[in-house]
Length: 360
Image (cartoon, rainbow, N blue to C red; front, side, top):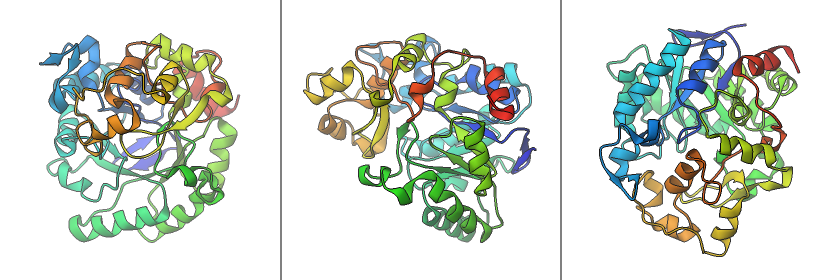
């Protein structure tokens, strides 16, 4: 059963989550699209792509400022290489609303050949502004409640005479940053299974665009459950970390394979929302304020306020995520959804997509 997103169709009801700083780049996204899902390239931290080959300025071997932490040239190369894998099948780009130069990055992604733009980490009320000149590019905001969807639809319709082509509803069991407070993450009313129906009902007021449920989705039975609640499909990030093609470092995959259920927990983040990842050596260093120096070389996201929030919580998110990408187990930050501990071996994207479609 294919799903229509704007002018594009995906054969299987599975969107691969956009995972920043080298987790979902050309190989993962290209292979997911090749196998009939929607592969999603993350625009975060592209300055690290191919050993920082496209980065114009480094300080302490890290890309300097937003202009280098994000590289337009690297993003174009990632899309080019993903296309070698998936041909003309739909490819999306995930761009954080909180990212510095958000509007510029959206335009760069369109130029690079993104068919679909996905945006979360904030309420993207002006998202359509940045795809003018690219009428075929579909837009998917990420929301955490029906109220958020209503606000976006009202604003988009009034200002731009358009509506989202699809919506991702992300519950509080996902990896990385949450759209909820610490308290809400454990409250029954905010669990994904209780959010789907209200969001699907709200979508009916705006033409019933496809809703993809995300956060803690692991296998075919989870997918079936979400679709029974009214979702058109699901978004899955963590499960794809357990694939050979995932662009993450082998050490990142080893951390997940070794993780136990109690090792995956919420933590504070410089972005201002709780984030979920694996408890490692870094967690202890942060707790005792003995971690690496915080210098804000990359200036990656606006809410961090140029390192002010990083110093408050005890770590720089750009440096620690890039350490994870480069395989540094001592200082790396390894994001994972609640089910990451269930990864016990690596399989191919093709095999995973078959399992998700046909059952284990």
